[in-house]
Image (cartoon, rainbow, N blue to C red; front, side, top):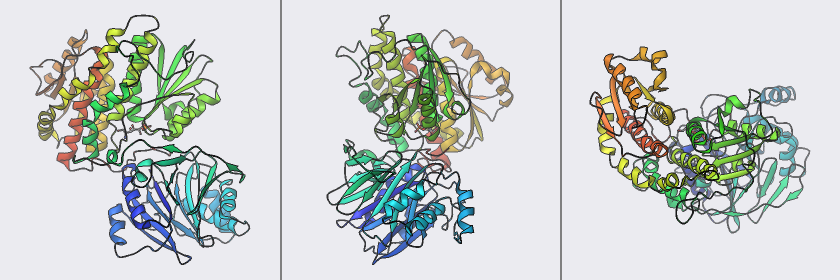
Length: 598
Ligand code: AGP
């Protein structure tokens, strides 16, 4: 969603910092972009609808002679994508960029209008600028006006503010939307996410909710909302700037698909004993004692990984696992008991609904565990215990390596719990074979591309699987929808007769996921039924399916390893379908990488 970049300092060209930062936030999804800076005590703003490249072109002949500047990419929530609604927003001497949603902006706007204020845009953000402007007339400092104005807001925000009357200061604050401070030598940076900062510094401090950062070219100070000084931990980022580049791949998504074997190796590392026969996890010894029911909560792809987690936890650890979408769980007043545990899974660690579900569980006093990829993200910090996936930065909007590393954590967790009561050393050892299995599947990319070339003009597709491959059917359909914009459904194959088989005709590709197990024959019957109705069958299986129109054959692996292998063809198929269609693979329309608002 929206991306924020800020710079204060004398060492660099602010234009370069802002454009580099904004380009590295493009993956978050946006529809307009803008920058603002102070020059000789006056605010200058340039903004436009469209991509950062358009903004770059718009300011190509503008030299920014300034030590203080803000940049923003907007993902429209209140008001359509347009230049006027793009950030930054200026009210008098105050200029603001904002990520989040102000829920009471209509009431506030009404009040401010009654007091004589006027508004240029349809956004909720302009209300923040207006409130800060109003407070600045009776406050001594910008931080004081910001802190007072924020008390009136309901909703979520990460904001950065500058004031013509205090030209050597940026003030930032946040609640439920991420904001990171980059610390240089006599220069400071602000951003919604680490990739925007990596070219300039690796020293960062994460702002927490209800905290303010006051940045000058010489120092950064942190305060709570009462204006009291607080100290913050400085963290060193271990990613290299290269990890956020495409490294010769045409798209981040393709690069990330190919990075999966490495991501699995990194996630396994440190979580297995030397002989690879025991799982070691960074959890408190007694954390799982007496746990009765585990609630698995997430959104989108992370929810699909959690659904696989349910199969794994119930089979290996013999623990009841309930699965729910974060957006449903948080509003349905779930029955939670003392010995229940909530596991929230999130790549970004900033998904608004997942964070709210986690907070609900904490308020109800049950234990919480997060599975996250983004270090020190809001979810990672809020949960009682955290297990990190080590996928590295995932930039493509379509989640790939985060998904398979999440499945790996669920494998590790189930086997970790199982090993207390039984010998699961063989199953644990199998985990170390995943990277080489994945390489074998990746070597079939050309074949998958050829299959996609036959079907990319189809208007719909259906994915079906059973048991632990049913979530992969859901994930395949999601991938195809989000990047190739093709209507796609994922179904448990046993449900075909209860409705979806009515869709089958000679135009419908059905992607059938078959594994060599006790229900292989059941899946075969589903395939036969599709063929009997002239549907097109693309079989992803572990042995040739003669009646299928196309076959993708995967290595034979154990049941708990299969989701890793079946993930790759569905990712590559969606990728190539999108490539042939010519859609925007890394930044699909209307989508954001980090869904920080409801
Ligand atoms: C994945 O391809 C999607 N873009 C999306 O469903 C994503 O998985 C979901 O928004 C959850 O994000 P999170 O893992 O960062 O919480």
